[in-house]
Image (cartoon, rainbow, N blue to C red; front, side, top):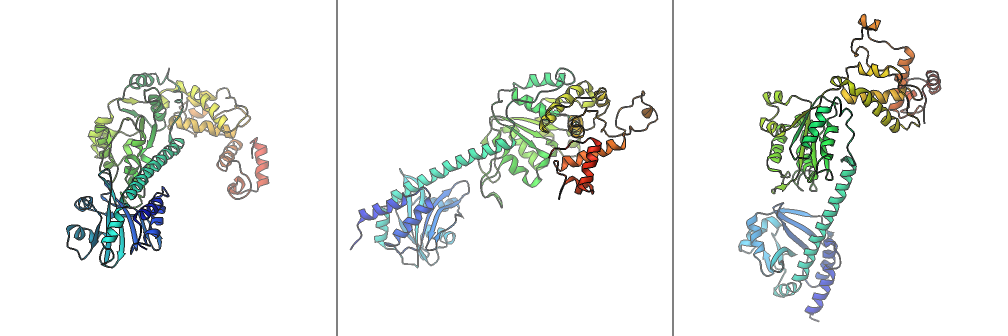
Length: 507
């Protein structure tokens, strides 16, 4: 009984529209089409402009659905394919321009392809290809039959592409959410301790520049609190509701820096299985903070200069520019001018980022801020460590801190406070754990007059060391990785010594 065209159209349309997953839908069509065509393989292709290649949306054979494929395609060849207005049979023995151009690309040798151009309102969206092994697989009756279902295949391909784009946007939003939860600063900025005293000049400059879009360069030693100042600039600006992306330029390997900052396209290099948006794209509409910018390798400096000049970024492996609306805050503890003379930092980039420099003085130059900083860290660290009651600071302890030179600046002070709280849970904080010999000369102390470092009793030194080990093991005493095993003593001996030294322990 001859095949009824209406029945063929209905059955094929039902199958190609049966799933938004184009691979599943094409597999169902393949099983039906094999009943009426000498069919061995079925392809559904589009031309990916970004890849400059044919992208196989689906490929089905007798063994089942096959993984996606990318077939490099010169623009001239795709123009020949787009020029097809009607289904056509292609064999390697034909001498037409399209068969000669396509044969080596799609492994046509010894096979017959029935190519069906897919269009929606005259616009080409892709091509359906039926393949038969052998040179004489398809006849005019096959051409006429497949022509009747070109429109349903075109609609299905268009819907699949729209669905793919929707999933891409969903994944992008999920990726943004994950990234925001992991890396972005939210809420309000940390209070600037010393804004009315040692950092008065800094806070005045922050108020001046925050409402503008100017690039800001934060200068100062490691640990002075450059990130706190960057937070203050962002959250005092009109961009405060936008993203605030932080990048430690010295923590990213040179081989990954371009991808991390500027992103990459799918297939840009080995391992680039999906497209990736860089930190600059993620910061669009907000602020990007480039900490330790002096650590950037020279090639990345060139790309960064282009971003600053044009406010646009081009992904690795991409061909289009992505416009950006961002503010850049950079920070460094290095002497960039000296690095320019050593050819380790670009002078033109220096001019771009040095529009509004803010120098943050080291803690030793603003000793009046130390008491307030100490009280704040005691409050925060007590809460982090789960203490029910915040420990008090012993009389004279703040003087000890003020007289210390703090080579590690605010970060070192924060660490000292945490270490002291671990040692003296339930007692008063005396801050006798500072490095010997690093305090400023105090002529009222006989030890200082003789040039000797301040010494601490053996029990205090032992308590300090045990406290460090307990902090490292998160309070674990027994078993592998426990404090007793690390210290090389019996766990009962350690507990006895802790009791003697007044070290409280929470399991």
